[in-house]
Length: 621
Ligand code: GAL
Image (cartoon, rainbow, N blue to C red; front, side, top):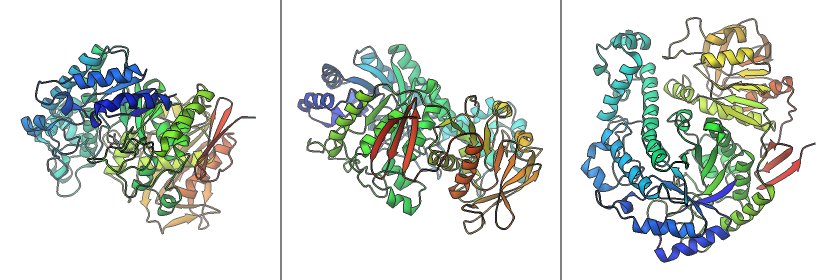
Protein backbone atom coordinates (compact mmCIF):
# COMPACT_ATOMS: atom_id res chain seq x y z
CA UNK A 1 0.00 0.00 0.00
CA UNK A 2 1.25 3.46 -0.92
CA UNK A 3 0.86 6.74 0.93
CA UNK A 4 -0.08 9.95 -0.78
CA UNK A 5 -1.34 13.46 -0.29
CA UNK A 6 -3.75 15.92 -1.86
CA UNK A 7 -1.86 18.95 -3.08
CA UNK A 8 -2.98 22.29 -4.47
CA UNK A 9 0.06 23.91 -6.10
CA UNK A 10 -2.22 26.74 -7.24
CA UNK A 11 -2.57 27.79 -3.58
CA UNK A 12 1.15 28.37 -3.08
CA UNK A 13 3.96 30.42 -4.61
CA UNK A 14 5.82 28.53 -7.26
CA UNK A 15 9.16 28.91 -5.48
CA UNK A 16 7.79 26.70 -2.70
CA UNK A 17 6.80 23.71 -4.87
CA UNK A 18 10.18 22.01 -5.03
CA UNK A 19 10.55 22.16 -1.25
CA UNK A 20 7.05 20.71 -0.83
CA UNK A 21 7.82 17.87 -3.23
CA UNK A 22 11.08 17.06 -1.48
CA UNK A 23 9.39 17.05 1.92
CA UNK A 24 6.62 14.80 0.60
CA UNK A 25 9.11 12.26 -0.62
CA UNK A 26 11.13 12.42 2.61
CA UNK A 27 7.93 11.86 4.57
CA UNK A 28 7.28 8.57 2.82
CA UNK A 29 4.64 9.86 0.43
CA UNK A 30 4.87 8.62 -3.13
CA UNK A 31 1.55 9.70 -4.68
CA UNK A 32 0.15 13.22 -5.11
CA UNK A 33 -3.39 14.06 -6.12
CA UNK A 34 -3.72 17.42 -7.85
CA UNK A 35 -5.86 19.50 -10.13
CA UNK A 36 -9.43 18.67 -9.19
CA UNK A 37 -10.48 22.24 -8.43
CA UNK A 38 -8.19 24.17 -10.76
CA UNK A 39 -10.48 24.97 -13.71
CA UNK A 40 -10.34 28.77 -13.26
CA UNK A 41 -6.53 28.63 -13.40
CA UNK A 42 -6.39 26.18 -16.31
CA UNK A 43 -8.93 28.04 -18.44
CA UNK A 44 -9.23 31.56 -17.04
CA UNK A 45 -11.36 32.64 -19.99
CA UNK A 46 -13.41 30.59 -22.40
CA UNK A 47 -11.05 28.79 -24.74
CA UNK A 48 -7.88 30.42 -23.37
CA UNK A 49 -5.82 27.79 -21.60
CA UNK A 50 -2.93 28.47 -19.27
CA UNK A 51 -0.98 25.27 -18.97
CA UNK A 52 2.47 26.58 -18.13
CA UNK A 53 2.03 26.71 -14.37
CA UNK A 54 0.52 23.22 -14.25
CA UNK A 55 3.19 21.85 -16.58
CA UNK A 56 5.82 23.14 -14.19
CA UNK A 57 4.00 21.82 -11.11
CA UNK A 58 3.73 18.38 -12.70
CA UNK A 59 7.43 18.47 -13.63
CA UNK A 60 8.48 19.50 -10.12
CA UNK A 61 6.55 16.58 -8.61
CA UNK A 62 7.87 14.23 -11.27
CA UNK A 63 11.43 15.31 -10.55
CA UNK A 64 11.01 14.02 -6.98
CA UNK A 65 9.72 10.69 -8.33
CA UNK A 66 6.17 11.30 -7.13
CA UNK A 67 3.29 9.71 -9.02
CA UNK A 68 0.38 11.93 -9.87
CA UNK A 69 -3.34 11.34 -9.71
CA UNK A 70 -4.71 14.09 -11.92
CA UNK A 71 -8.24 15.30 -11.24
CA UNK A 72 -10.67 16.50 -13.86
CA UNK A 73 -11.82 19.90 -12.55
CA UNK A 74 -15.52 19.46 -13.24
CA UNK A 75 -16.72 19.87 -9.63
CA UNK A 76 -15.86 23.58 -9.87
CA UNK A 77 -17.10 25.13 -13.13
CA UNK A 78 -15.80 28.72 -13.26
CA UNK A 79 -17.95 31.82 -13.06
CA UNK A 80 -17.71 32.65 -16.73
CA UNK A 81 -19.19 29.28 -17.60
CA UNK A 82 -22.12 29.64 -15.21
CA UNK A 83 -22.79 33.12 -16.55
CA UNK A 84 -22.83 31.81 -20.11
CA UNK A 85 -25.15 28.95 -19.21
CA UNK A 86 -27.15 29.99 -16.14
CA UNK A 87 -29.54 27.06 -16.41
CA UNK A 88 -26.70 24.57 -15.86
CA UNK A 89 -27.13 24.86 -12.08
CA UNK A 90 -29.19 22.33 -10.18
CA UNK A 91 -32.48 23.33 -8.55
CA UNK A 92 -33.13 22.17 -5.00
CA UNK A 93 -36.29 20.46 -3.76
CA UNK A 94 -38.02 23.81 -3.34
CA UNK A 95 -37.04 24.77 -6.86
CA UNK A 96 -34.34 27.27 -5.83
CA UNK A 97 -31.12 27.47 -7.87
CA UNK A 98 -27.93 26.17 -6.28
CA UNK A 99 -25.76 29.02 -7.41
CA UNK A 100 -22.12 29.91 -7.90
CA UNK A 101 -19.85 30.67 -4.93
CA UNK A 102 -18.67 27.32 -3.64
CA UNK A 103 -18.61 24.12 -5.70
CA UNK A 104 -20.75 21.37 -7.27
CA UNK A 105 -23.11 23.96 -8.77
CA UNK A 106 -24.21 21.90 -11.73
CA UNK A 107 -27.07 19.68 -12.74
CA UNK A 108 -26.09 16.19 -13.89
CA UNK A 109 -28.85 16.27 -16.50
CA UNK A 110 -27.80 19.48 -18.23
CA UNK A 111 -26.56 18.51 -21.68
CA UNK A 112 -24.67 21.76 -22.15
CA UNK A 113 -22.74 21.27 -18.94
CA UNK A 114 -22.03 17.65 -19.74
CA UNK A 115 -20.50 18.82 -23.02
CA UNK A 116 -18.41 21.42 -21.18
CA UNK A 117 -17.24 18.79 -18.70
CA UNK A 118 -16.26 16.59 -21.63
CA UNK A 119 -14.43 19.49 -23.28
CA UNK A 120 -12.31 20.35 -20.23
CA UNK A 121 -11.65 16.66 -19.54
CA UNK A 122 -10.43 16.23 -23.10
CA UNK A 123 -8.21 19.30 -22.80
CA UNK A 124 -6.57 18.11 -19.58
CA UNK A 125 -6.23 14.54 -20.86
CA UNK A 126 -4.67 15.73 -24.12
CA UNK A 127 -2.16 17.72 -22.14
CA UNK A 128 -1.21 15.15 -19.48
CA UNK A 129 -2.59 11.81 -20.67
CA UNK A 130 0.84 10.58 -21.73
CA UNK A 131 2.92 12.29 -19.06
CA UNK A 132 5.07 9.67 -17.33
CA UNK A 133 4.28 11.08 -13.87
CA UNK A 134 0.51 10.90 -14.36
CA UNK A 135 -0.33 7.34 -13.39
CA UNK A 136 -4.00 7.74 -12.55
CA UNK A 137 -7.02 9.99 -13.00
CA UNK A 138 -9.74 11.04 -10.63
CA UNK A 139 -13.01 12.06 -12.27
CA UNK A 140 -14.62 15.17 -10.78
CA UNK A 141 -14.72 15.22 -6.97
CA UNK A 142 -17.16 13.53 -4.59
CA UNK A 143 -20.27 13.18 -6.71
CA UNK A 144 -23.19 14.07 -4.48
CA UNK A 145 -21.25 16.13 -1.93
CA UNK A 146 -23.42 18.92 -0.48
CA UNK A 147 -26.51 16.97 -1.53
CA UNK A 148 -26.08 17.54 -5.24
CA UNK A 149 -27.21 14.35 -6.98
CA UNK A 150 -30.89 15.17 -7.13
CA UNK A 151 -31.77 18.18 -9.21
CA UNK A 152 -35.31 19.41 -9.80
CA UNK A 153 -34.49 21.45 -12.86
CA UNK A 154 -36.30 21.52 -16.22
CA UNK A 155 -33.31 19.62 -17.66
CA UNK A 156 -33.76 16.89 -15.06
CA UNK A 157 -37.51 16.75 -15.67
CA UNK A 158 -37.07 16.35 -19.41
CA UNK A 159 -34.39 13.70 -19.01
CA UNK A 160 -36.53 11.88 -16.44
CA UNK A 161 -39.38 11.63 -18.94
CA UNK A 162 -37.07 10.10 -21.51
CA UNK A 163 -35.71 7.69 -18.90
CA UNK A 164 -39.24 6.63 -17.93
CA UNK A 165 -40.26 6.10 -21.55
CA UNK A 166 -37.24 3.87 -22.08
CA UNK A 167 -37.97 1.89 -18.97
CA UNK A 168 -41.76 1.48 -19.18
CA UNK A 169 -42.29 1.81 -22.95
CA UNK A 170 -45.95 2.74 -22.62
CA UNK A 171 -47.43 5.08 -20.06
CA UNK A 172 -50.19 2.63 -19.14
CA UNK A 173 -47.51 0.22 -17.96
CA UNK A 174 -46.14 2.98 -15.73
CA UNK A 175 -49.62 3.82 -14.40
CA UNK A 176 -50.25 0.17 -13.64
CA UNK A 177 -46.85 -0.47 -12.06
CA UNK A 178 -47.04 2.59 -9.83
CA UNK A 179 -50.72 2.16 -8.92
CA UNK A 180 -51.57 5.61 -10.22
CA UNK A 181 -55.29 4.89 -10.09
CA UNK A 182 -54.88 5.79 -6.41
CA UNK A 183 -55.73 9.51 -5.96
CA UNK A 184 -56.35 9.92 -9.74
CA UNK A 185 -52.65 10.22 -10.54
CA UNK A 186 -52.90 8.56 -13.97
CA UNK A 187 -50.94 10.06 -16.86
CA UNK A 188 -51.86 10.08 -20.55
CA UNK A 189 -48.29 10.42 -21.73
CA UNK A 190 -44.77 10.46 -20.34
CA UNK A 191 -44.70 14.20 -21.02
CA UNK A 192 -47.24 14.70 -18.25
CA UNK A 193 -44.95 13.26 -15.56
CA UNK A 194 -43.50 15.90 -13.25
CA UNK A 195 -40.68 15.52 -10.77
CA UNK A 196 -41.88 14.32 -7.36
CA UNK A 197 -40.69 17.30 -5.30
CA UNK A 198 -43.54 19.78 -5.27
CA UNK A 199 -46.56 17.57 -4.53
CA UNK A 200 -48.85 18.72 -1.71
CA UNK A 201 -48.13 15.73 0.48
CA UNK A 202 -45.88 12.72 -0.14
CA UNK A 203 -45.65 11.75 -3.79
CA UNK A 204 -46.16 8.14 -4.82
CA UNK A 205 -43.24 6.09 -3.41
CA UNK A 206 -42.91 4.38 -6.81
CA UNK A 207 -42.50 7.82 -8.39
CA UNK A 208 -39.76 8.72 -5.90
CA UNK A 209 -38.00 5.41 -6.36
CA UNK A 210 -37.97 5.89 -10.12
CA UNK A 211 -36.58 9.39 -9.63
CA UNK A 212 -33.87 8.10 -7.27
CA UNK A 213 -32.89 5.42 -9.81
CA UNK A 214 -32.90 7.99 -12.59
CA UNK A 215 -30.79 10.46 -10.59
CA UNK A 216 -28.25 7.74 -9.86
CA UNK A 217 -28.13 6.78 -13.54
CA UNK A 218 -27.46 10.42 -14.44
CA UNK A 219 -24.35 10.43 -12.24
CA UNK A 220 -23.10 7.23 -13.82
CA UNK A 221 -23.75 8.63 -17.28
CA UNK A 222 -21.98 11.91 -16.49
CA UNK A 223 -18.97 10.03 -15.14
CA UNK A 224 -18.86 7.66 -18.10
CA UNK A 225 -18.39 10.53 -20.53
CA UNK A 226 -15.17 11.44 -18.73
CA UNK A 227 -14.04 7.84 -18.39
CA UNK A 228 -14.34 7.26 -22.11
CA UNK A 229 -12.24 10.32 -22.90
CA UNK A 230 -9.59 9.36 -20.35
CA UNK A 231 -9.41 5.79 -21.66
CA UNK A 232 -8.91 7.11 -25.18
CA UNK A 233 -6.27 9.73 -24.35
CA UNK A 234 -4.53 8.15 -21.39
CA UNK A 235 -4.67 4.41 -21.88
CA UNK A 236 -3.21 2.15 -19.23
CA UNK A 237 -3.78 4.60 -16.39
CA UNK A 238 -6.15 3.81 -13.56
CA UNK A 239 -9.34 5.82 -13.32
CA UNK A 240 -10.81 6.44 -9.90
CA UNK A 241 -13.36 8.59 -8.12
CA UNK A 242 -13.68 9.55 -4.47
CA UNK A 243 -16.86 8.37 -2.74
CA UNK A 244 -17.98 9.70 0.63
CA UNK A 245 -18.94 8.41 4.06
CA UNK A 246 -22.51 7.28 4.88
CA UNK A 247 -23.56 8.53 1.49
CA UNK A 248 -26.05 6.71 -0.72
CA UNK A 249 -27.23 9.27 -3.26
CA UNK A 250 -26.15 7.18 -6.24
CA UNK A 251 -25.50 3.50 -6.73
CA UNK A 252 -21.80 3.04 -6.10
CA UNK A 253 -21.85 -0.44 -7.62
CA UNK A 254 -22.95 1.08 -10.91
CA UNK A 255 -20.38 3.89 -10.79
CA UNK A 256 -17.55 1.56 -9.81
CA UNK A 257 -18.27 -0.71 -12.78
CA UNK A 258 -16.74 2.01 -14.99
CA UNK A 259 -13.71 2.66 -12.77
CA UNK A 260 -10.50 0.72 -12.16
CA UNK A 261 -10.22 1.68 -8.51
CA UNK A 262 -12.94 3.00 -6.23
CA UNK A 263 -11.68 5.64 -3.82
CA UNK A 264 -13.33 7.07 -0.75
CA UNK A 265 -12.70 9.96 1.61
CA UNK A 266 -12.26 9.01 5.23
CA UNK A 267 -13.07 11.57 7.93
CA UNK A 268 -13.78 9.43 10.99
CA UNK A 269 -14.04 12.30 13.49
CA UNK A 270 -16.19 14.46 11.24
CA UNK A 271 -18.49 11.51 10.49
CA UNK A 272 -18.84 10.64 14.17
CA UNK A 273 -20.02 14.18 14.88
CA UNK A 274 -22.33 14.47 11.90
CA UNK A 275 -24.04 11.11 11.77
CA UNK A 276 -26.24 8.92 13.92
CA UNK A 277 -24.18 8.11 16.94
CA UNK A 278 -25.31 8.52 20.53
CA UNK A 279 -24.20 11.58 22.44
CA UNK A 280 -22.29 9.22 24.69
CA UNK A 281 -20.35 7.69 21.78
CA UNK A 282 -19.70 11.12 20.27
CA UNK A 283 -17.96 12.15 23.44
CA UNK A 284 -16.26 8.84 24.17
CA UNK A 285 -14.82 8.46 20.69
CA UNK A 286 -14.42 12.18 19.91
CA UNK A 287 -10.67 11.93 19.33
CA UNK A 288 -10.50 8.53 17.63
CA UNK A 289 -13.82 8.01 15.85
CA UNK A 290 -16.25 5.16 16.35
CA UNK A 291 -14.24 2.01 15.66
CA UNK A 292 -16.50 0.84 12.82
CA UNK A 293 -16.80 4.03 10.80
CA UNK A 294 -13.70 3.71 8.65
CA UNK A 295 -13.73 -0.09 8.42
CA UNK A 296 -17.40 -0.18 7.36
CA UNK A 297 -16.59 1.98 4.37
CA UNK A 298 -13.41 0.08 3.56
CA UNK A 299 -15.43 -3.12 3.36
CA UNK A 300 -18.39 -1.51 1.62
CA UNK A 301 -16.32 0.09 -1.12
CA UNK A 302 -14.07 -2.93 -1.58
CA UNK A 303 -17.31 -4.80 -2.31
CA UNK A 304 -18.47 -2.13 -4.77
CA UNK A 305 -15.15 -1.89 -6.58
CA UNK A 306 -14.50 -3.78 -9.77
CA UNK A 307 -11.97 -6.50 -8.92
CA UNK A 308 -11.99 -5.29 -5.31
CA UNK A 309 -9.48 -2.49 -5.98
CA UNK A 310 -10.01 0.47 -3.66
CA UNK A 311 -8.18 3.38 -2.02
CA UNK A 312 -8.57 6.06 0.57
CA UNK A 313 -8.19 9.21 -1.52
CA UNK A 314 -8.60 11.60 1.39
CA UNK A 315 -7.76 10.86 5.01
CA UNK A 316 -8.22 13.33 7.83
CA UNK A 317 -4.85 14.26 9.40
CA UNK A 318 -6.18 16.67 12.05
CA UNK A 319 -9.38 18.62 12.75
CA UNK A 320 -11.76 19.18 9.84
CA UNK A 321 -13.82 22.35 9.45
CA UNK A 322 -17.25 21.05 8.54
CA UNK A 323 -18.62 19.02 11.43
CA UNK A 324 -20.67 20.34 14.36
CA UNK A 325 -17.53 20.14 16.48
CA UNK A 326 -14.06 19.52 15.14
CA UNK A 327 -11.67 17.89 17.61
CA UNK A 328 -8.14 16.73 16.84
CA UNK A 329 -7.28 13.05 16.51
CA UNK A 330 -5.32 11.45 19.35
CA UNK A 331 -1.61 11.05 18.67
CA UNK A 332 -1.43 7.67 16.95
CA UNK A 333 -4.79 7.82 15.19
CA UNK A 334 -3.44 8.80 11.80
CA UNK A 335 -1.24 5.74 11.99
CA UNK A 336 -4.08 3.53 13.24
CA UNK A 337 -6.48 4.62 10.50
CA UNK A 338 -3.78 4.11 7.90
CA UNK A 339 -2.85 0.62 9.06
CA UNK A 340 -6.51 -0.33 9.32
CA UNK A 341 -6.98 0.63 5.68
CA UNK A 342 -3.95 -1.54 4.90
CA UNK A 343 -5.42 -4.50 6.79
CA UNK A 344 -8.66 -4.11 4.82
CA UNK A 345 -6.81 -4.17 1.52
CA UNK A 346 -6.40 -0.54 0.39
CA UNK A 347 -3.95 0.25 -2.42
CA UNK A 348 -3.37 3.81 -1.26
CA UNK A 349 -4.04 6.11 1.66
CA UNK A 350 -3.78 9.75 0.65
CA UNK A 351 -4.04 12.48 3.26
CA UNK A 352 -6.17 15.56 2.80
CA UNK A 353 -4.26 17.84 2.53
CA UNK A 354 -0.65 18.83 2.26
CA UNK A 355 -0.84 22.33 3.71
CA UNK A 356 -3.60 24.25 5.43
CA UNK A 357 -4.67 27.16 3.22
CA UNK A 358 -5.11 30.33 5.30
CA UNK A 359 -7.93 31.68 3.16
CA UNK A 360 -11.38 30.74 1.89
CA UNK A 361 -13.83 28.07 3.01
CA UNK A 362 -11.51 25.48 4.53
CA UNK A 363 -9.10 27.73 6.40
CA UNK A 364 -9.80 25.84 9.67
CA UNK A 365 -9.13 22.40 8.10
CA UNK A 366 -5.80 20.87 9.09
CA UNK A 367 -3.15 19.64 6.68
CA UNK A 368 0.16 17.87 7.15
CA UNK A 369 1.74 21.33 7.20
CA UNK A 370 0.39 24.33 9.05
CA UNK A 371 -0.43 27.49 7.10
CA UNK A 372 3.10 28.77 7.79
CA UNK A 373 4.61 25.56 6.32
CA UNK A 374 5.79 24.23 9.67
CA UNK A 375 4.95 20.56 10.19
CA UNK A 376 1.61 19.71 11.83
CA UNK A 377 1.69 16.73 14.22
CA UNK A 378 0.45 14.25 11.62
CA UNK A 379 3.51 14.67 9.40
CA UNK A 380 5.85 12.79 11.74
CA UNK A 381 3.20 10.10 12.19
CA UNK A 382 2.92 9.66 8.45
CA UNK A 383 6.70 9.26 8.23
CA UNK A 384 6.75 6.51 10.86
CA UNK A 385 3.68 4.81 9.36
CA UNK A 386 5.50 4.65 6.03
CA UNK A 387 8.27 2.75 7.83
CA UNK A 388 5.74 0.39 9.41
CA UNK A 389 4.26 -0.32 6.01
CA UNK A 390 7.66 -1.03 4.52
CA UNK A 391 8.26 -3.59 7.29
CA UNK A 392 4.85 -5.20 6.82
CA UNK A 393 5.13 -5.70 3.07
CA UNK A 394 2.08 -6.63 1.00
CA UNK A 395 -1.06 -7.45 2.99
CA UNK A 396 -2.24 -11.04 2.98
CA UNK A 397 -5.71 -11.87 1.83
CA UNK A 398 -8.34 -11.77 4.58
CA UNK A 399 -10.13 -14.97 5.48
CA UNK A 400 -13.82 -15.11 4.50
CA UNK A 401 -16.07 -15.33 7.54
CA UNK A 402 -19.25 -13.25 7.50
CA UNK A 403 -20.86 -11.44 4.60
CA UNK A 404 -23.39 -8.67 4.69
CA UNK A 405 -25.60 -7.92 1.70
CA UNK A 406 -26.22 -4.27 0.92
CA UNK A 407 -27.99 -2.53 -1.88
CA UNK A 408 -28.26 1.21 -2.50
CA UNK A 409 -31.88 1.06 -3.56
CA UNK A 410 -32.73 -0.52 -0.19
CA UNK A 411 -31.63 2.73 1.43
CA UNK A 412 -33.54 4.82 -1.13
CA UNK A 413 -36.66 2.83 -0.31
CA UNK A 414 -36.35 3.23 3.45
CA UNK A 415 -35.70 6.96 2.98
CA UNK A 416 -38.76 7.26 0.75
CA UNK A 417 -40.95 5.22 3.08
CA UNK A 418 -39.34 4.95 6.50
CA UNK A 419 -42.64 3.90 8.09
CA UNK A 420 -41.04 4.67 11.45
CA UNK A 421 -38.68 7.50 12.33
CA UNK A 422 -35.08 6.78 11.40
CA UNK A 423 -35.66 3.32 9.97
CA UNK A 424 -32.85 3.24 7.44
CA UNK A 425 -31.43 0.29 5.53
CA UNK A 426 -27.98 1.89 5.58
CA UNK A 427 -27.97 2.21 9.35
CA UNK A 428 -29.42 -1.27 9.74
CA UNK A 429 -26.42 -2.44 7.72
CA UNK A 430 -24.04 -0.42 9.88
CA UNK A 431 -25.48 -1.85 13.10
CA UNK A 432 -25.27 -5.42 11.79
CA UNK A 433 -21.72 -4.76 10.64
CA UNK A 434 -20.82 -3.39 14.05
CA UNK A 435 -22.34 -6.42 15.78
CA UNK A 436 -20.29 -8.77 13.57
CA UNK A 437 -17.13 -6.77 14.22
CA UNK A 438 -17.71 -6.84 17.96
CA UNK A 439 -17.33 -10.59 17.53
CA UNK A 440 -13.92 -10.05 15.94
CA UNK A 441 -15.08 -11.33 12.56
CA UNK A 442 -13.90 -10.33 9.10
CA UNK A 443 -16.87 -8.92 7.24
CA UNK A 444 -17.33 -8.48 3.51
CA UNK A 445 -20.15 -6.30 2.20
CA UNK A 446 -21.50 -7.34 -1.18
CA UNK A 447 -24.07 -6.52 -3.81
CA UNK A 448 -27.16 -8.76 -3.70
CA UNK A 449 -26.22 -10.57 -6.90
CA UNK A 450 -22.75 -11.60 -5.69
CA UNK A 451 -22.06 -15.26 -4.94
CA UNK A 452 -22.07 -16.21 -1.25
CA UNK A 453 -19.72 -19.19 -1.49
CA UNK A 454 -17.07 -19.57 1.14
CA UNK A 455 -18.78 -17.66 3.93
CA UNK A 456 -20.06 -19.21 7.14
CA UNK A 457 -22.66 -16.55 7.81
CA UNK A 458 -24.70 -14.21 5.62
CA UNK A 459 -26.64 -11.24 6.96
CA UNK A 460 -29.37 -9.34 5.08
CA UNK A 461 -29.96 -6.37 7.38
CA UNK A 462 -32.84 -4.79 5.45
CA UNK A 463 -33.34 -5.47 1.77
CA UNK A 464 -36.88 -4.66 0.60
CA UNK A 465 -36.27 -5.96 -2.93
CA UNK A 466 -34.78 -9.44 -3.15
CA UNK A 467 -33.32 -10.20 -6.56
CA UNK A 468 -33.66 -13.59 -8.29
CA UNK A 469 -29.92 -14.29 -8.03
CA UNK A 470 -29.95 -13.52 -4.30
CA UNK A 471 -32.95 -15.79 -3.68
CA UNK A 472 -31.21 -18.58 -5.60
CA UNK A 473 -27.88 -18.05 -3.79
CA UNK A 474 -29.60 -18.13 -0.42
CA UNK A 475 -31.42 -21.33 -1.35
CA UNK A 476 -28.12 -22.99 -2.11
CA UNK A 477 -26.29 -21.46 0.89
CA UNK A 478 -25.14 -23.93 3.51
CA UNK A 479 -24.16 -21.62 6.38
CA UNK A 480 -26.18 -19.49 8.77
CA UNK A 481 -28.49 -16.76 7.49
CA UNK A 482 -29.79 -13.71 9.37
CA UNK A 483 -32.64 -11.77 7.77
CA UNK A 484 -33.72 -8.37 9.03
CA UNK A 485 -37.08 -6.61 8.87
CA UNK A 486 -38.59 -5.39 5.58
CA UNK A 487 -36.48 -7.87 3.62
CA UNK A 488 -38.48 -9.19 0.68
CA UNK A 489 -41.27 -6.77 1.47
CA UNK A 490 -41.42 -5.04 -1.91
CA UNK A 491 -41.29 -5.70 -5.62
CA UNK A 492 -39.43 -3.81 -8.34
CA UNK A 493 -41.96 -0.94 -8.46
CA UNK A 494 -42.51 -0.66 -4.72
CA UNK A 495 -45.60 -2.89 -4.56
CA UNK A 496 -46.10 -5.33 -1.69
CA UNK A 497 -45.63 -8.90 -3.03
CA UNK A 498 -48.87 -10.69 -3.91
CA UNK A 499 -47.97 -13.44 -1.43
CA UNK A 500 -47.04 -10.90 1.30
CA UNK A 501 -43.52 -10.36 2.63
CA UNK A 502 -40.96 -11.86 2.51
CA UNK A 503 -42.00 -12.70 -1.05
CA UNK A 504 -39.32 -14.85 -2.62
CA UNK A 505 -37.91 -15.77 0.80
CA UNK A 506 -41.08 -17.39 2.13
CA UNK A 507 -39.76 -20.94 1.86
CA UNK A 508 -36.48 -19.99 3.52
CA UNK A 509 -38.31 -18.41 6.43
CA UNK A 510 -41.01 -21.06 6.58
CA UNK A 511 -43.70 -18.41 6.76
CA UNK A 512 -44.82 -14.85 6.15
CA UNK A 513 -45.01 -11.43 7.74
CA UNK A 514 -48.66 -10.54 8.14
CA UNK A 515 -48.31 -7.21 9.91
CA UNK A 516 -45.49 -4.74 10.56
CA UNK A 517 -45.45 -2.21 13.37
CA UNK A 518 -42.92 0.53 14.01
CA UNK A 519 -42.24 1.44 17.60
CA UNK A 520 -41.02 4.44 19.51
CA UNK A 521 -38.04 3.66 21.68
CA UNK A 522 -40.13 3.24 24.84
CA UNK A 523 -41.89 0.21 23.29
CA UNK A 524 -39.65 -2.83 23.50
CA UNK A 525 -39.35 -6.54 23.95
CA UNK A 526 -36.96 -7.28 26.77
CA UNK A 527 -35.03 -10.50 27.12
CA UNK A 528 -32.14 -11.73 29.17
CA UNK A 529 -29.41 -9.17 28.45
CA UNK A 530 -31.05 -7.78 25.31
CA UNK A 531 -33.71 -5.28 24.39
CA UNK A 532 -35.45 -5.16 21.01
CA UNK A 533 -37.27 -2.08 19.77
CA UNK A 534 -38.00 0.14 16.75
CA UNK A 535 -39.99 -2.34 14.71
CA UNK A 536 -42.09 -5.44 15.19
CA UNK A 537 -43.00 -7.89 12.46
CA UNK A 538 -45.80 -10.35 13.11
CA UNK A 539 -44.71 -13.68 11.74
CA UNK A 540 -46.93 -16.65 10.85
CA UNK A 541 -45.41 -19.96 9.83
CA UNK A 542 -43.37 -22.95 10.85
CA UNK A 543 -40.29 -21.25 12.33
CA UNK A 544 -39.53 -21.73 15.99
CA UNK A 545 -39.00 -18.91 18.47
CA UNK A 546 -35.30 -18.19 18.88
CA UNK A 547 -35.40 -15.17 21.19
CA UNK A 548 -38.51 -14.58 23.26
CA UNK A 549 -39.07 -11.63 25.55
CA UNK A 550 -40.22 -11.82 29.15
CA UNK A 551 -43.72 -10.93 27.93
CA UNK A 552 -43.79 -13.93 25.57
CA UNK A 553 -43.40 -12.01 22.31
CA UNK A 554 -40.88 -13.38 19.83
CA UNK A 555 -38.18 -10.96 18.67
CA UNK A 556 -36.26 -13.50 16.58
CA UNK A 557 -37.44 -16.62 14.75
CA UNK A 558 -35.47 -19.58 13.49
CA UNK A 559 -36.22 -21.85 10.56
CA UNK A 560 -33.47 -24.36 9.78
CA UNK A 561 -30.29 -22.31 9.72
CA UNK A 562 -32.16 -19.08 8.95
CA UNK A 563 -32.96 -16.52 11.62
CA UNK A 564 -35.48 -13.74 11.16
CA UNK A 565 -35.00 -10.63 13.28
CA UNK A 566 -38.52 -9.30 13.76
CA UNK A 567 -37.34 -6.12 15.50
CA UNK A 568 -35.11 -3.38 14.19
CA UNK A 569 -31.51 -4.64 13.84
CA UNK A 570 -29.73 -2.46 16.35
CA UNK A 571 -28.16 -2.44 19.80
CA UNK A 572 -28.09 -5.36 22.19
CA UNK A 573 -30.80 -7.15 20.21
CA UNK A 574 -28.90 -7.53 16.96
CA UNK A 575 -25.67 -8.20 18.84
CA UNK A 576 -27.33 -11.19 20.45
CA UNK A 577 -28.95 -12.41 17.21
CA UNK A 578 -25.65 -12.26 15.36
CA UNK A 579 -23.73 -13.89 18.19
CA UNK A 580 -26.12 -16.86 18.26
CA UNK A 581 -25.98 -17.17 14.49
CA UNK A 582 -22.17 -16.98 14.44
CA UNK A 583 -21.90 -19.68 17.08
CA UNK A 584 -24.27 -21.97 15.19
CA UNK A 585 -22.27 -21.30 12.02
CA UNK A 586 -19.09 -22.49 13.73
CA UNK A 587 -17.40 -19.11 13.86
CA UNK A 588 -15.45 -18.74 17.07
CA UNK A 589 -16.97 -15.61 18.43
CA UNK A 590 -16.42 -13.88 21.71
CA UNK A 591 -17.51 -10.31 22.22
CA UNK A 592 -14.71 -7.72 22.14
CA UNK A 593 -14.66 -4.54 24.24
CA UNK A 594 -16.43 -1.73 22.41
CA UNK A 595 -13.22 0.10 21.46
CA UNK A 596 -11.24 -2.90 20.14
CA UNK A 597 -11.49 -4.40 16.68
CA UNK A 598 -9.64 -7.18 14.91
CA UNK A 599 -8.87 -8.19 11.40
CA UNK A 600 -7.37 -11.46 10.35
CA UNK A 601 -5.25 -11.36 7.16
CA UNK A 602 -3.58 -14.62 6.22
CA UNK A 603 -2.12 -15.84 9.48
CA UNK A 604 -1.67 -12.38 10.93
CA UNK A 605 -4.21 -10.88 13.31
CA UNK A 606 -4.33 -7.10 13.64
CA UNK A 607 -5.77 -5.59 16.79
CA UNK A 608 -6.89 -1.96 16.75
CA UNK A 609 -7.43 -0.29 20.09
CA UNK A 610 -9.26 2.89 19.26
CA UNK A 611 -9.23 4.55 22.67
CA UNK A 612 -5.53 3.85 23.15
CA UNK A 613 -4.78 4.70 19.48
CA UNK A 614 -2.59 1.63 19.11
CA UNK A 615 -2.25 -1.13 16.53
CA UNK A 616 -0.65 -4.48 17.20
CA UNK A 617 -0.30 -7.56 15.08
CA UNK A 618 0.54 -11.11 15.92
CA UNK A 619 0.72 -14.47 14.19
CA UNK A 620 -2.52 -16.38 14.65
CA UNK A 621 -2.33 -19.71 16.48
C1 GAL B 1 -13.97 16.41 1.06
C2 GAL B 1 -13.64 17.06 -0.26
C3 GAL B 1 -12.38 17.88 -0.19
C4 GAL B 1 -12.39 18.72 1.04
C5 GAL B 1 -12.53 17.84 2.25
C6 GAL B 1 -12.48 18.57 3.56
O1 GAL B 1 -15.33 16.18 1.17
O2 GAL B 1 -13.50 16.10 -1.26
O3 GAL B 1 -12.28 18.67 -1.32
O4 GAL B 1 -13.42 19.64 0.97
O5 GAL B 1 -13.76 17.19 2.18
O6 GAL B 1 -12.64 17.69 4.64
